[in-house]
Length: 226
Image 1 (cartoon, rainbow, N blue to C red):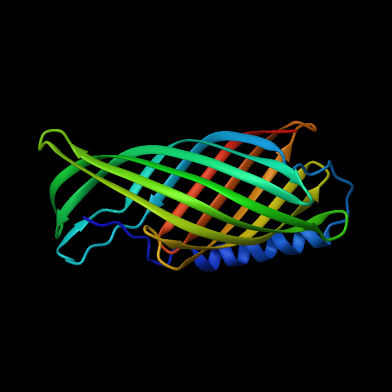
Image 2: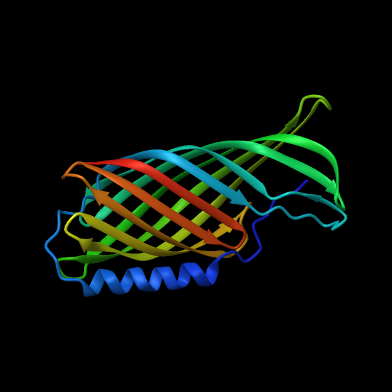
């Protein structure tokens, strides 16, 4: 059984969204709350991974899981910051022969990552960011009735480049292009767009969407900035 994320999903939509977000970051003049590179973020995550097999007549459904995530960033000084994240979710999946279901599985998925980033100001309202990172993906399939269990554990490396800035005095946005390669993902590009609605200097509501070659992830959470 193998899992790979190789189908093209929502690339054009995310590309247009990323371009629109980037233009907004540079075009709307407004005083804004200070952007922080030290924060904690936690909330709900929904993720989809594309399943693929060598035999088209015997295939695994795409993996859909949802659950919780925690992420954060710490500013290190000299315009450097360290990031970390953990996403955990569960769902179910089916093995099919044509349209017939042969077996059903419980699925548990986990992704953990760490990265080192750099930012540079583009005026008072925006900055560009670059990040290199490592990501571990673990997926477990289990059918207790069949006494079947199989685990996938893979490591990947990621490079991201993007823009982050102020869309309004209490609204921050970002857009990134990502490249990832390794065991689970194979030379794949994706796009990320996100926003942070600030209630005050510390608390805010964050949302983010990422999609690319077979992988989609959506986050909604609460952020505490320091």
